[in-house]
Image (cartoon, rainbow over all chains, first blue to last red; front, side, top):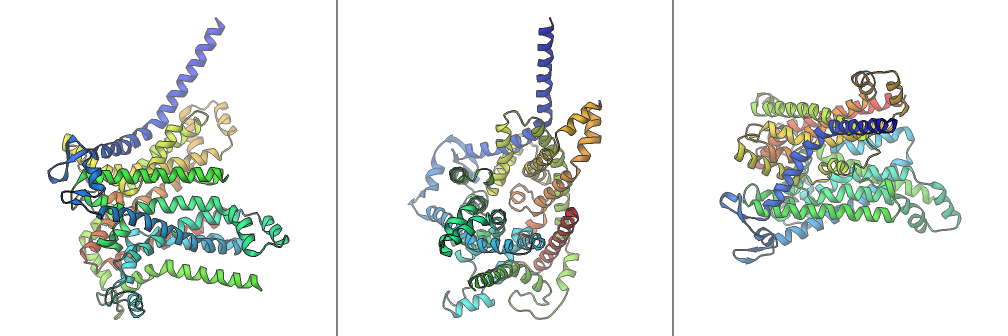
Length: 306
Length: 265
């Protein structure tokens, strides 16, 4: 008797806990499910439909969208989309590398300053990224347009054709990406530098390691978790970037994001756009997964954000 | 000796980076005071673009839309996200992997995929049911979707930082769940709620891509207005309005610095 009532009480406890979980979590979970999971599933299904009039998806199911993404059109194969893909990858890699090269000394410099100044210095790096990204890209358009001092300089040095201007170009896109993502690398690297165990560096120096060796063996491994976190924060959004290539790149600077977006606007081919979106999703999740694996192997553990 | 060269090099890189970071913004601010409509030559100082701004009804409207969108989406996200944050904390011993994935999804999804999914979904939904016509309503829904995770994570981390015995104490005093929420939970997480609200507000005001794809013809926000003006090449007032937005960011930066200083004291 006592046994069964205790059991009932425990059951009641479990039920009320579950109800509590449902009431607290359900509204938000349902919101994200209804307004993000369902829409993305719908978008993915669109990729497997055929292109109807006005670019809207219709039955029957087909794989045409993926063929078009690979470059097969009415007029045979053309490399246009492939160029866009390769360009997206290339821009991502180059801009991430540049961001690392700039962010590394900057983050280290901040840790060499007095402690009370550090929040201010970090803030100075981050504040530009608080302004709207459209405005920031517009600033670069103003700076790089034909006839501006920078363009004239590049012209005089023979880097560009006469009266071409530095924008629109692939160079402008790379510059815009580096500008946009620099703070996302400085912050995690700074966190890594701040925790740096100076005793290891000291030990390396005591053992007569050259500065280069000391750096690669005593400093670099310690900052690796920050570097990985920064790479996740920079490379993944850079690959899907839309605003910067659209404003700074022109027709020949298009990236995957623009290819996808165009299919829902001007050229109107929803299935093709959806296929591009799937590709972008795959790249995102592969990237995240790979970074996580690398982070685990290096023992970064919790420091790697995602 | 070598150490000093290193330090000098670092200082040089630091100032060069700052120059790089602030140059485009400085150019915008400078040319907003240009009397001629040119971004290459500065003729003379004038406030003509700011005067034009005040008379431009579209810009005023867009500003109003941005504010309505940011405030209403932040309020909804605050309520919903706060509940999730609390639920995650209370039930942190259970296996909630699916919930974590759901919460991280809006953060990791590329903006463009996010925006286009919502757009395709809303267009199709409107065609089938006649509800949710693209406009401010759909924009609010989309914004709430990307704000919820941030609110939930901020509230959750605040709870994790609390002493668990506090919860027991509140229970021991025989407070009803409602009273516990009102007199204990809400006051203790108030700082988290405030910062979550401001973060949501900033994310919403700052967002362009997702707004752009979920907006309707009547619901232009400030970033969308600026975007279309740039695209059409009609940009005289853009420098002025961008300068005002940069000014707002500068004020926010100074405020955050002051608050930080105060918080540490």
